[in-house]
Length: 199
Image (cartoon, rainbow, N blue to C red):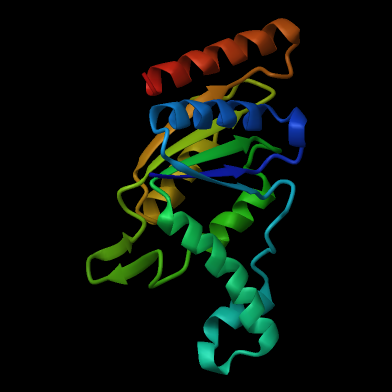
């Protein structure tokens, strides 16, 4: 059993999403004591963005790449190997300006590679990262769940599903910026959601 934890918050130890994602990981490790954990903190150590040079490196056949292109592709290869090896994925996802952190978007761009993690067929695209369970912790300062302003869950469900990861559970912690009482209630609610998911 391999657990991959992706932290995308830029708040480090003060991060709400990191705190709750860690709670899920702790519960999973208690449930699967022999599980191996890999933590990838893209908030602290951001992955390079998908720019023109990175795209060109991917389009060049491996044997024709420059040393710089080879190094750039290898960075993405490392992330792809981690997600391929994972059985359980735990995502810490704060809401920044009604979207996911750019650091998480860069990670998603890196692991989405045609003919490696997805492919196109005569009947449409097929995700190749199948048979994995994903837990995504969504933290927000306000309350947006099931409203038109909540684009995080639909987006993540779409992109993860495109890659073959269709078994996705969301944990919500909302109202975290609405005062101490609201913050405490949000954490209690999120912890109850986690307990129910991992009972």
